[in-house]
Image (cartoon, rainbow, N blue to C red):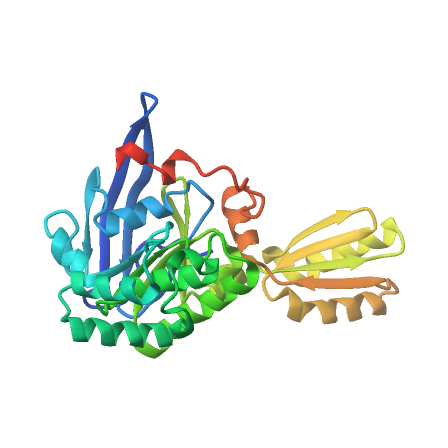
Length: 344
């Protein structure tokens, strides 16, 4: 499985970190939120930071967006140092945090215009940009409504639009789908993917939703306990783990023989486990090999009573890397590592 930490994707990456760390103190104990992060993101990539709550994903984004300073190490964003050139970094990026960026009393259009004016746009340019974004994010009909009256999905789309008012080429999204129902989550993912595909915007987002990272990201950076533990495309991360083939047999004796044949046919790259009358085989390209294996067993007089093939998921990848299931991580375990509070 690929665990490369540095991806030199461009002659001048839009994001580059070297040995980036962030420590803070809580209850007299030192917490290492980010540990020696080495990372490069090329222009035009859509990268997902995937990991459980408390893994250090949001802290990493806060470092890259100048909201907090690193304890050690360096980071450059859009060619600017995040400590020495904060203002330049902030003018070059869009950032959408976990909380709503828009106020509750103002109308959606007014929020966009105010943000445009804050970035130096003329009144006419700010209004024109607001109309463009309202149309792009399917919010034209809600433009004159107070933000407090919008649905969760509409507010989140408005948050993203606010982050794009000044037309940044680099956008950071911190848990953009958190709190949304499944349909609104899919709708937002489609908007983010379109933003990347049509405009070429470089996007870095954090998520603990496996399906979200799998569906929209060009590249998945798996983070756990403040460290990058895997970095590749979702398809390569999953293919490195292989497919799970489950074979059922009539008797335990036949299952034992079936497991022996599977081990012989698939070689050392396969993991074969027998449990009663069931044999489970994890192997690269297991889906392709399964029909031939079933045919061979039938020729040997060992019929397979049932067969099931399941491709590896990102949760399987995380389980292989950490011994824990990301799906089973307690949703209430939003730990201090991703919520620094006063330490920020």
